[in-house]
Amino acid sequence: MWRAFGTATGRVGLVFNIPARSNGSEAMRLTFSPVAYFKNNQADQLVAEVVKNIHANITFLKTVKPEEICNWIFYMLLWAATCTKHESFWEEKEWRAVHCPDLYPTELIKPAIETVGGVPQSVYILPLDKTFDPVLEDLDFAKLFDRLIIGPTPYPTAMFDAYNEALVNAGVLDAGKRICISGIPIRS
Image (cartoon, rainbow, N blue to C red; front, top):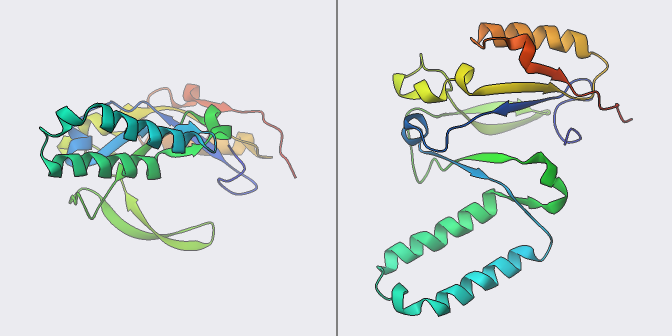
C-alpha cells in the first residue's frame, strides 16, 4: 500500500478509530464507509442481484414514493463509485470519509487548493479539532488517533522523532508508543 503514497524517502499510514455515528460527522455532513474490494466481475454481479431483488419485492416497492427509490439508487451508485477498489487491495481494510459539498454543503469543511505530488488540486479540509467548533468534540484528532505506521524509508528515526513531536503538539497521549516502524524494505 506504500507504492502510491508519499515520496520515495518517507511514507506513513495513519490509523484512526472513527465512531460510526457522531455529532461531528453529522455537522460536517460526512459519511464514513468501509471500502468493498471486488474482483473484476463482482460489481456486475452485485448490480444483477439488486435488479433481482427489485423484481422480487415489487409489491413492497410500489408502496414507496418514487423520489425515495431514486434516492436509494443514487446512494447505491454514489457508494459504488467512491467506496470500491480492486480485490488485490483487500489487506488495506480501508474506510472512506465521503463528503459531497454540492449536495450537502457545510460551513465546517472548507475547500482549498493544495499541491500534492507536484499537482495543484482542490481538496477539502476536515477540521478534526474541537477548538474549531465544540460540535467536533467526538471527532477531535487526539481522540480519533490510534497509531502511525512509518513505511519504507532510509530515515525511520528522524521521521519517528518528527512525528512524535507533531503528535504531542496535537494533544495525543503516549504519542511515542503509538508510532511504529513497518520494517518493510525499500524497493528501488
